[in-house]
Length: 239
Image (cartoon, rainbow, N blue to C red; front, side, top):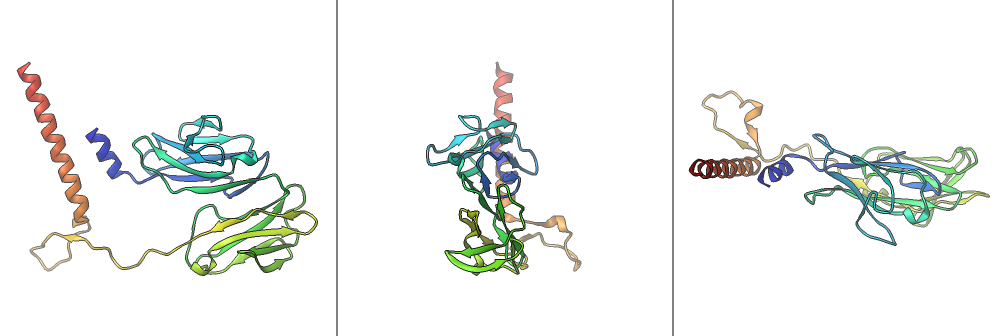
């Protein structure tokens, strides 16, 4: 139990990736959802909330699990919902919204929040016609502009670009709405660190710059493990 807690503290949460990378799908499309984590994806499962059921995991009436990946070979409109990765110990990734439409137009937009200052391209697609048809793009219900090739780029996005976006193609219809979120770029200011005193005037080596709370937690966990193992060994010796 203690070893698992230490592993939980040292590992970063998994991220849910979507392939193909988009938030809207046509009915009948297929999608692959994967929990990706730097150290190991073992123990992570894909879960979802839909209008019918909540907190169901892949394989429980939907999707085919393959390790930490969930494959859906045929999407229905009822597969629309919120998806996320969850570890067996309770940790969870950020969630994403997937929309499955029975219509003939979708908006291709980023699945995850975009970074402030980046360029974002939105594309309007039909199910059968070419993807370069003229399309009108809307934000929060208001027309932004019409693009002749069905693609619109938002340059150097800021928080003011957040909102619900959709598109429409003449004689084909309009897409559902998808939210675009903008994340603030991390500050370039160095985080607060614990610096061990150095007897010389030279800068301390990088390995001495450590986070004080992290050191305290790891040391305490190691001490608890050592005490626990010592007690177990003494009890085995007496028996």
